[in-house]
Length: 86
Image (cartoon, rainbow, N blue to C red; front, top):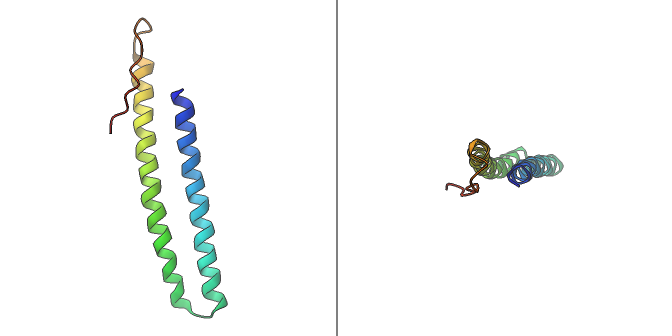
């Protein structure tokens, strides 16, 4: 169960990076089309926003990996504790 959550979060991170590349490419192409090079600076906004979002996903993924390791080390005689620390 935890492995599927970790895989899903990793997939979301990859999707975020794809959207960032698409958006930045569109802004750069628009800047070239209208012959205004300073419009390229607008591409920094989605880069920063997606970087913050990606860092958040990586933080959550790391927490789930720590939970997975804790569950893996627990005795099989007890029910596992699936609490995620925030």
